[in-house]
Length: 366
Image 1 (cartoon, rainbow, N blue to C red):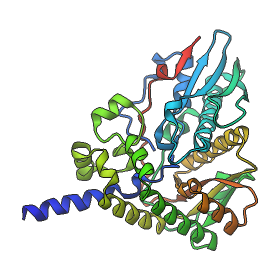
Image 2 (cartoon, rainbow, N blue to C red):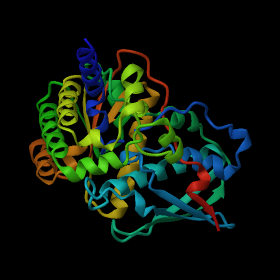
Image 3 (cartoon, rainbow, N blue to C red):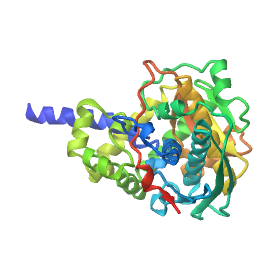
């Protein structure tokens, strides 16, 4: 009986983990027990706090900011956040920086500031990315609540197409985004390629090792690092969540059982959604990637405002053969940059989950 009990717990745990560690293109966060008391924060802390709620691959939070007394700033990349196994050309890092910039613009506008900026990097290997300045604004927008609400959702999708009204709300006036409903030929193509790309990644040692580096299994490690992937952020809760927080470490990520259960979960999730949103760009120059990251965040915020779930699953774009296959089979002339699994939820939109580094860890006053 004891052997059977252990076998049950092990199987239940692996089944719960599955894909949650692969969506890694993916944009994930862990629970915030209490939002900061914004009344106690300075204006700059508030602005950059909300900007930092942007998504990033493996939740690396790659941004560093220098702000001077003239309200001029430089946004840089923390080189320790590079993901060479899944993002060797730093494409996804630059996309994440674009999402951060979009949140920065929105949070500044919500707190009475305008922002002017320019992309200063010449290649995606550059660490200095954006320069700009703030100025006082006469009006304020209301963006803070939706930024605080937004989260990545991986489970509970209904197999139901989005309504025309919701599609228009999410991607209206966005020429770089297209929606492909569940049961369409295009959706099936993305399903198949996404599964194949996940299969490739779980069997590549470098990818597994890199993933393991960014998983914060225990509460203690999560509190210390305040970044990366955690069980709670990957929807591993209840008994499985307790088990992985207590007993798991990096070795489990490279086990054969972990790989099998990951692919099982991938298959289950690809069978339950409302379709895909594909975001493209004309090229992958730094400026285009930054603007595409901004578009991503705009779509994520619009979807969140309408309680629509989005799960970035861009593994196929991290694998060269599959990236070409996606563009060719969908008849896309531009470069696909994001594959977003979308859908309605069978339950309420869950509370936001995120642990972020404190503002003073990435914002430097000079």
